[in-house]
Amino acid sequence: MGRDTSNVSLARRAYAIRRNALLMGEVQGQGYIGQALGAADVLAVSYFHALNYRADDPKWEGRDRFLLSIGHYAIALYAAMIEAGILPDAEIETYGMDDSRMPMSGMAAYTPGMEITGGSLGHGLGIAVGMALGLKRKNNPAFVYNMMSDGELGEGSTWEAVMSGVQWKLDNLIAIVDFNDQQADGKTTDALAQVPEAGRWEGFGWFAQEIDGNDMDALVAAFDAARAHPDPVPRVIICQTKMCKGVPFLEDREITHFVRVEPDEWARALTILDEDRPDE
Amino acid sequence: MNDASLSRRKSKYTPRTVPVSEDGSKLTTSAMIASLDAEGRETVAAPFGHALVDLAKTRDDIVGLTADLSKYTDLHVFAKAYPDRFYQMGMAEQVMISAAAGLAREGFTPFATTYAVFASRRAYDFICMAIAEENLPVKIVCALPGLTTGYGPSHQATDDIAIMRAMPNLTVLDPCDATEIDQVTRAIADHPGPVYMRLLRGNVPDVLGEYGYKFKLGKAQMIRDGRDVLFVSSGFMTMRVLDAAKRLQADGVDCAVLHVPTIKPLDLETIAAEAAKGGRLVVTAENHSITGGLGEAVAAALMRAGVHVPFRQIALPDAFLDAGALPTLHDQYGISVDAVTASVKAWL
Ligand SMILES: Cc1ncc(C[n+]2csc(CCOP(=O)(O)OP(=O)(O)O)c2C)c(N)n1
Ligand SMILES: [Mg+2]
Image 1 (cartoon, chains in turn orange, red):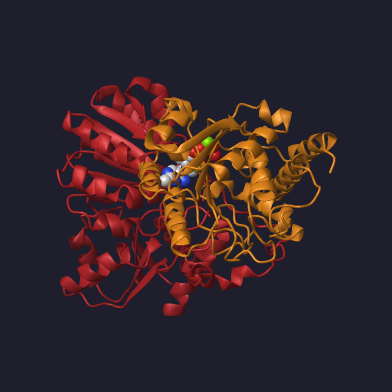
Image 2 (image 1 turned 135 degrees about the horizontal axis):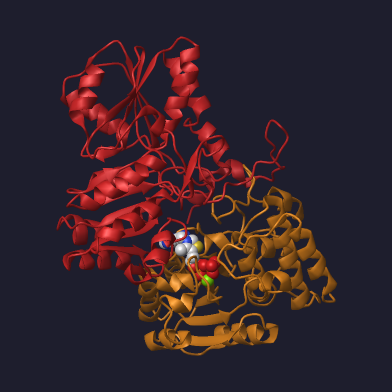
């Protein structure tokens, strides 16, 4: 498969990603479900509009590289890769189990399609710089996408990579920041994200776009613009997302990094999601 | 361009069915905040946080810093009690450590918290040069020591003691239970130099009280005596070997337990004197890689002291460990009470 040529709408893809994530959360009775629901639209546009890949050959040399810098978001990426056919539906019930291929924190050695091992935050963008350099050396026109979080904007290593990407004129590097204004202890904007985000990246020389990351049209436009931008600079899409998006009773819960869901609430969340199922 | 990462765990790369435990229940990945060994024991909530609050009442110099993990290191208790003495540094371990060094230079006694992996790996150079080389009184207190989460190598600090032991000037501590964490927190506040302390957080079991134990910085202490085996242990492994000792007793194996919460400086005298008594198999037990931790420190100390005794190590393998449920992993890697008991029986 190249870029998605089916007629399934992106909204329907995002719904399916949310659904897969809730099913996995139910298996473990826990999980970073707030992140998965919040980032589902970004992942739908990534996997069903922007990325070039072959579902049956996750190591295909021509693929766009999609790095999950944020290992704890693995549940979200598994949900997207299941919808994309990279991972089988049947494995949903193994999520987080001993010997599963889908551990709770994303690791390259476990999962087809998982490019890097996450978990220690602030690694992805630097690795992405190296892969973007490597692709250029090989004259491979693929893009490197690095999916990262606003919490990672606190790590010095992120900003080293930001400067490096500009030094090496990496126009094949696209950073996606899931800006949910949340990290482990509270709001990111109370910690190290004190100034408007796009300005920081622009100051370093990146082509920056800041959008509503739960708005499908805005996402599509931003991914298209990131790929098409003519200047020899790296690109960033700052996606303002809402944690738990799509399940109002969870959205309204006091938002924390690790959203607690009671055993009976998984089914309730699925029912609510299904009530608004978009057409194909 | 070969695929080294995939070959490491080839077995994981095939479709799986849902594994179940013996009683038929599903084994789920242990959450990071799970309280270890709390089941069926007395526990104390957030012993580190409460001890620090207590200390701060009389010690104006104490300040707290965290790198986005106050809730996960029990420092939130201090943050709530003393909001103006608490610094939320964001997820930036390096500047947290540098800033702690700066605060120490200005006369304060900073307690800086994160997970053990992030202090020992990411912030190492900053601890080494900004704090240890200058012998500054910064206390680095780290949750998730060794194998205390099922999240895989990114959060499993199986190498932190090896890393930290190699740093001159640094005192390295691996307390066992809630009472000891309380006592250690007070002791290190009075200690003039830098400290790395492993932390158990949440509802922490209390086990040493029944043995009348009291922590002394730099001292190894006998918790129970025995004729056949001398366990030399630290951290929660002391709880585990105490349990194993009870089981082995039933089989007629008499085990002593020497608890060594101060890994550096190591109490060479006590360890050598106990080992030299002879007639006992010396078994070190640690929640850490077999490389560079308590076991190797004890082995070297005994060799240097000329004490030649039968010696075995209970420790994690020198490998990146699996993700999964903690009970499964502790059995798999030989640090559960069952596994310790079985190992000792096999060695005798
Ligand atoms: C280097 C590093 N430091 C600390 C942590 C612990 N940690 C895990 S998630 C997290 C919050 C990070 O912020 P973000 O990714 O924005 O969190 P979310 O939006 O998922 O709440 C922290 C501090 C980590 N995984 N890696
Ligand atoms: Mg965030």
